[in-house]
Image (cartoon, rainbow, N blue to C red; front, side, top):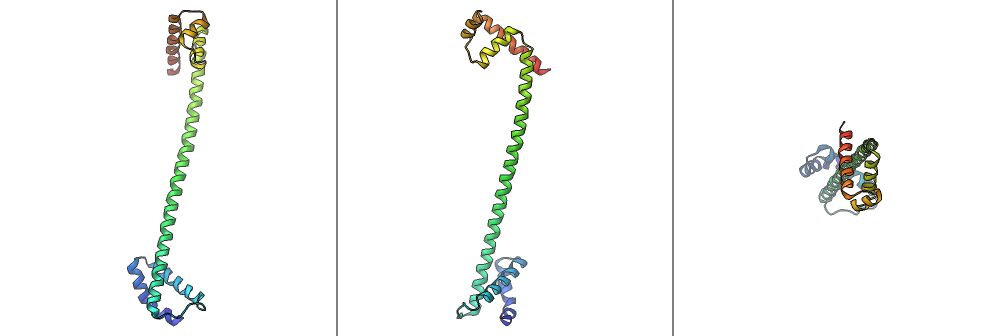
Amino acid sequence: MSQLFNTSYSWLFKYGYRIIPKRSLVKDAIQELFLVIWNKRDTINEARSVRSYLITSLRRIIFRRLEKQRNRSERNYDYRESFLEDEKNIEQSIISHECSNSQKEQLKIAIEALSKRQRQAIHLKYYRGLSNNEIAEVMSINKQSVYNHVSKAIIKMQNVVEQ
């Protein structure tokens, strides 16, 4: 076995290096080839051409290793992308939550700055979803007064938020 290794290593290396010019990969593939031969020495049939058997086996091992590397690289890339995407989603969620809380606080302050009638008109319009006619009925005022209360309330709220 060692004699086969010593006499074939050089030309196997040259052959493997032509397939893929990576010294360490070719060396490892040759080592794996002879390890497989050693482990299966009792079950391997006698080959018609030892050289042909070694070349074919080495080529299979090299291509298998390249395929594993490619698959590993793809998995690593996919993992890295999904991790970055998850990280972006978490970060975006935190930012969105903080913005939402900040906006809610600003809205609360702005609503507190309104008069009682303006606050009631805004509440009925935006929180209860009533139309201007319905608001006019509930507040016992005319439709134009509803427009006035809502528009003045919005302007006042904008001013409070901008400060």
